[in-house]
Length: 113
Length: 114
Image 1: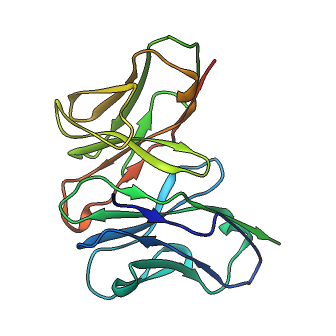
Image 2 (image 1 turned 90 degrees about the vertical axis):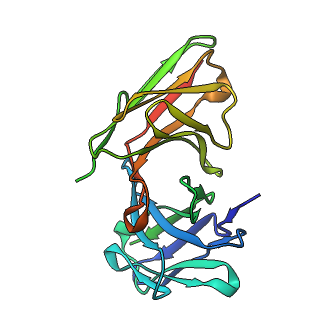
């Protein structure tokens, strides 16, 4: 069965530290890839997405992600985190031609001032 | 701006009650989805609908049913609520495909079953 793995369940960083959150998926065909973020008390919202083309994708708030097809990975990065980045981050995969997303279990990021 | 609204933010029900969760989207999206969100498990798909009166089971449909009588509205029904259905329920919608195929989420309904 298709699955999405987020190995970091809880990450604690100080402000200005660099961030990398891992995401690996098991589906072998063509996929669309997403990172969503859920700030405390807020809606789940899209950070960035990859459909095709340049494997380095830039999103909102200074986030970026790199799709490495050979590693089935789509890791999220930010060079310098802020306290306001404290949130839960979800990776999601959608095989081409399917309608539904499969989500990872999420990574809770806590940024300390 | 896409808007997905859910009828309640918080709901408390008793075991055995029939529960209706309503979701409305204003962007004429073909696809609508119901997920439940539990700590450490992420979001799991319950059901989705790709057109009026059309539905497909997701990964965890047991104990749930859905209804889509109008394009903008998608209802999740718990026929007989149980305590293990205490969770956060998220509704989402998306257009039919292509580069705009992004799911937009509602604020969620936190359901407690006593």
